[in-house]
Length: 308
Image (tube, rainbow, N blue to C red):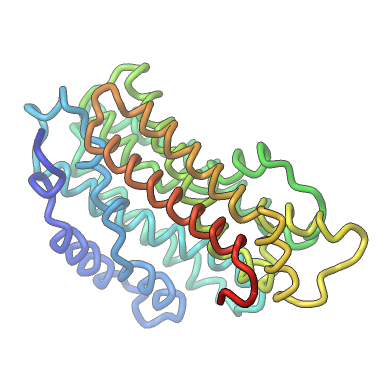
């Protein structure tokens, strides 16, 4: 099995994405600065996705140039996704309308250029149909997120939250769909790979929710972890963020969230077992990381105040 680094150079992928975005005609706009700040974030698990999820049975036919084009697309998709998320989540941030529309269209066109570069003409059409569906799912998730501030404090079922989180990550999954189209994966291979990717995405989301529960409460962001904690207060509101965080810890909600993240990482690894060994290994690492953090929180809660 060839390691991911044997297919893609992370630094080169990042630099190509940065250089490509720097050639857009919106670089002097404030919105570009926000998008660009996310483009500078190094997330190898995202931008090296085409190598991590390249099936073993497709290695002989894989072309490094195509994988690199998909890796750059993954970098651009992720930065655009996070920029759009910020516009929804940062309720008090001024957003300039016309430049935002133009920049979004320009980023999509640039990303599509990389998809087209990677895919043969005969397969591109079927991929772009899938891409339209993924973008549609992401769009409605942003609309619903914009309304969640009005429902802050209302019960939020875990199943509903996870369905919504999957939709919000949809556009970031697009490079995987392009890869599976490129290697001509059959329907079962396609389903297992995308289900594994979404299981990882849910695990990563819940892991972040556990770490950011206090900050999310301060910002009025309704995650399942925040909603679950607010239910502990009954009819009253927390006095402040400190009391909220204390309850989230003592009632075991943070550790419960991490336990759920472990479950999703385990499922992602199981789905990857057939033909995706690099991705399977990453999922085992993610599960161990979540488990260690959960156990650290559990030990902390057993300490008496005088112990620390």
